[in-house]
Length: 132
Image (spheres, rainbow, N blue to C red):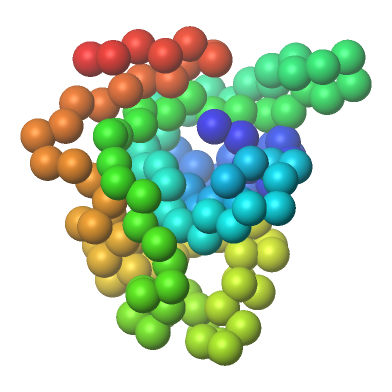
């Protein structure tokens, strides 16, 4: 995974088995179509921080992840229940800062709605995907 436009700082704070939820404001990076849902969930696979050459002038930092099959969970119906959103009218403001930690209540609320029961982790290592 990579976060905050490939910066190393936020990824250095993570440790093996830490959970990460992914929020997608749009359906594609350069597009305008709104998604506004949590779309992926996984755990940090190891302590390795590495760079990956995406183009001649872009080499973002990444972490290996174990992703879990999940359902997209729209944020709209949950805004009133999520503690990390302190201003319910300007709920999108919190996401402008990229990577941030949430409390156990919010994680449990989201992960219970996202994770598909009886799933198998999908490991992502150095841009390779392995189903287990």
